[in-house]
Image (cartoon, rainbow, N blue to C red; front, side, top):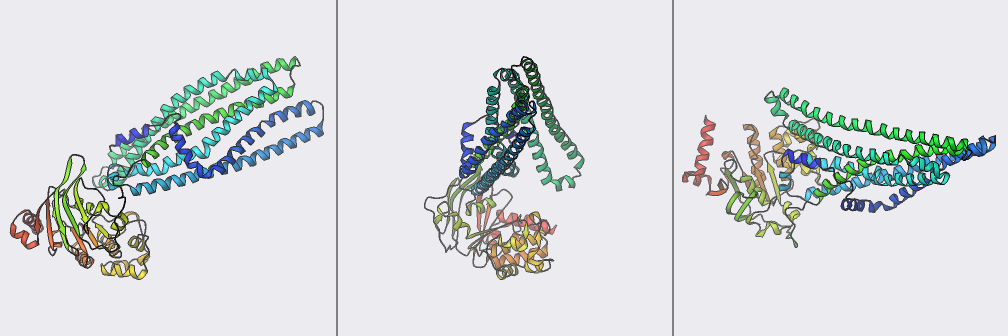
Length: 593
């Protein structure tokens, strides 16, 4: 997908309310319904208890301060202190409960996304940038967590609080309550207009942040090229532009908030002025007491607090729905390749491979393989050669069913790979690629990949493929900690470790994809020895760039532009003076030169 497409996806801030998404999100709360219920009950209790304080203040003034009843005043003060302590304890428990639910939902979602991504085919990863997938499982899920920890339940609490405040104001004095509510239309108008502006501002921030993230990911990955071509200054200037756009997008939201919240304060002050004017006249006319007026000032201040908080929660809720839509779109992505209803599984794979009239295309209308047919006997070593783009690696990918054929069939032991149980199939196949991927962890971890193997098995596998000699020279030996992608190891060392990784699993089918490229002659000799030991007794498919490494193969298949053009031994193919002969001449004349 294009970078612009990625940014378009970030522009979606979601609807203000989407019943379908909310219903689906609520399903993740279901396992924790009791904690949510307790949190809701606590919020209702807290909302009710908090409204007693202004009333108790009224009682303290009218019944005790005015009458000089110090003892009664002490009792009211003690009650207010106790009430505050109970409310504080309730808020602590409620916050812990909602945060727990948010973290548990985040844990469940991330686990589900990670599991789902592992079920998708390589075709999906070909089309979706890794950075976007990581974002789905990190920042998007974290945003969703906020909906549960400080969104839905807290919004409900704010609404209940508002209802209790309104009810308390009406109960104490209807006239002053109506005076307080006169500013509500103005409050609604300011809030509505601000929401419209903030919605656009948040969309702008999301777009700019997405562009900056994409820029950084691309250029960090390509840092070697940037430095090799001395391109740092130009890249730095381009990043300054992207970074500047992001800065101004954020500053716009800051400006809008700096206007919105003071306006709310001004409206609150206007309400206070109106209460003071009307309440003052009522006090002077002995229609209400001083305690009633003071209580109303407290209620008026509390009236605007949940409104401000609801405005903030609106942003959380809106961003959360946008994240939910992106996360659920990912979870709703169906795997390209479905598991068979009654999968075939066998504990004794012989290693017979057959391609029968195979057609394949990565993109619709762009055929990569054209009517490919060949047969590999168990224990046979087959080499596949051809120029770049001939379809060699595609053939290897189809054997392990990383992709499904567009037409024709691939058989393992006479059974179509689409009918095999994938776990059983992959236990019998090992791939060794040119670009060896190393995980963060020890040398031993990278050989076993977390599977249960004894130290003796690990060492024996490493010795067999000539990896033990360099491992023993490491400061920590097999427990040496590697860095990301194995940067501290040479290309040849990583290749030998990948051989050990394959050998320890004792596969029946071994696929070596350009396993000897990009190494020096001495390392190539070690790798060649390792390959011979690795291939012994197994069906081997060797994809090679260096023809010197496959001269002893039982058969060599020559591919050209997605077609199988020649097949035979090294000697026979040279005698035919066809494509293989030309490849051999080009390679060795280049080597001689």
